Image 1: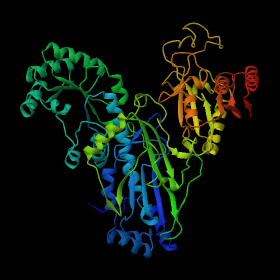
Image 2 (image 1 turned 90 degrees about the horizontal axis):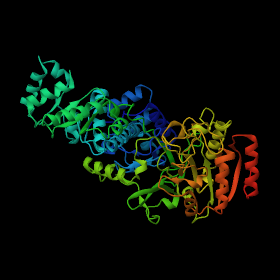
Image 3 (image 1 turned 180 degrees about the horizontal axis):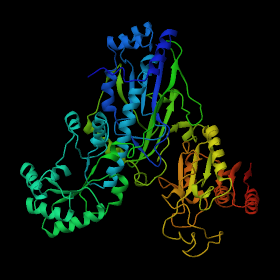
Image 4 (image 1 turned 60 degrees about the horizontal axis):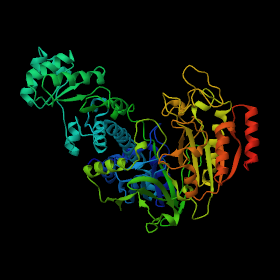
Amino acid sequence: MERTGLLTDRYELTMLDSWVRDGSVDHPAVFEVFARRLPEGRRYGIVAGQGRLLPLVEAFTFDADEVEWLRADGVVGPETAAYLRDFRFRGDIDGYPEGDLYFPGSPVLTVSGTLGECVVLETLLLSVLNHDSAVASAAARMVDAAGGRPIIEMGGRRTHEEAAVASARAAYLAGFASTSNLAAGRRFGIPTVGTAAHAFTLAHESEEAAFRSQVAAMGTGTTLLVDTYDTAEGIRTAIRVAGTGLGAVRIDSGDLAEEAARARALLDDLGATDTRIVATSDLDEFVMAALADAPIDGYGVGTRVVTGSGHPTAGMVYKLVAVGDEPGGPLRPVAKRSAAKASAGGAKRAWRRYDGGTLTAEWFTTGPSASVDAVPAGAVPAQVPMVRGGATVGAPTLEQARAHAAAAVASLPHGARGVAAGDPYLTVREEQQMSSSTDGTASTALIVVDVQNDFVEGGSLGVDGGRAVATRISKHLADHAGDYAVIAASRDWHHGGDTNGGHFAEPGEQPDFVTTWPVHCVSGAPGSDYAPELVTDAVTHHVVKGMGVPAYSAFEGVTDTGERLADVLRTAGVTSVEITGIATDYCVRATALDARGAGFAVRLLDGLHAGVAPDSSAAALEEMAAAGVTLG
């Protein structure tokens, strides 16, 4: 393998040069790879690329010419040049197994060693993990949407030639059946498929001549592309040439649902009942979900699995979380505190909990509780050893990683696997922030009520001041998230196409704005999304309510795993709740009163709620105070 030392950014080596000069290059350090958030609307991610990455880490060295170029170009000085001539990574790496799930805050890779040897790996680690994880995450959603129909990866003509190979590997890991890329087949043992393009048909004097040539070369089990001219006539010609034992026909244009239905009917009429239909043409998980009922037997996916349109960046970052002040000395936690880019300090150990095979929780521990010997009850470690002393250990095969990915996705509840946009199924935080019933660090929960697009300015039931309140709630979360045992955010989540038990006014009737309302917060529609001013990274439980029935209080809803909010709070040892959100005179009021009715001490946070109207909001505040809610 070629040396990979120059697959880095200049600033990594200029930092290294400074540390060599000041003597801190050999101080112990821990860096972590994690994502602060998932791409918009994604419920989970698949981490991929470790199988490609670890050999690249072992090859991260510099030859004499490279070192001389770095010195001559002014990147490093003579002392650092001498350091690099003998450089190789001699530290340890732990990480999530390739093909595993990750969520915001998951420490997917932990790199331990010296400051010098860890810092220079940043670009290499992130370029591989971000690319492959983005492709694998998109591919996993497509596999789910395909509903068991095989998918061919065929995007090599839409990206860089080496990215095409990596993309084919990541897609196969996530469940694609095969690839058209021969280099990926050769390097990784992925099954390869491919027959002919439209150019093959056009190059012959007739479609029949093209089909006869292909069948003569590949046999009747081949797949014939039938839509170069007229799809129906192409199918008739295909069966006339190959007979009713033809393997498959491919359709690459038109309304695929309609074309597939017509093709199936025609094939059956011609006696080719076992001939399969393969669909291509700018497919993604949304299109495949829409084609669920179409008589399609397999898909080919290219552009949308290998380019940004199909796999928005994984957004992983590489941050220093612990450092020592002398060689061999103890580590101290370090962390960024900048707005929207904060990190959690300290070397971490990640844990998961499952219930009947379903993933229900993920968190991390730091300090003494992160010891290998300190295993929380019922917890499963999320990380595994990958590198020890610079040498790769226990590297799974691609087939093993593929099996792991399938099992990981299967551990998600059904609601987290749909293609509809939603919030991350889990957000990973430190143990003391996840629950506190045993250590007493917190017994208070924060409830954020219905801060949604339809309830802020511009929404179908927009409240004046809603966006400002959302911004202030985000600031409160940034400053105080660690104070809460649970942070729950609720949303109206109404059915589209019906009145939701009389909650929506009947079509053609005017709502009375007391018990009947305009259509709002339809599940999966933009109006049901959190307002963009609300940062939900710290939310531990997402609650939805009003599925087909009128609902105002967050206590009427359920979490992603079907739990009632009151049960979540009691399990976490919560005794008091603080409430924020929209609207003061409706859903905030109902939530506060239900919280008091459930026996919790309740406080409505001043300035963090907005009402529909001054009079009704004032009345709601009086009613809440009378019920024992602390205001302000």
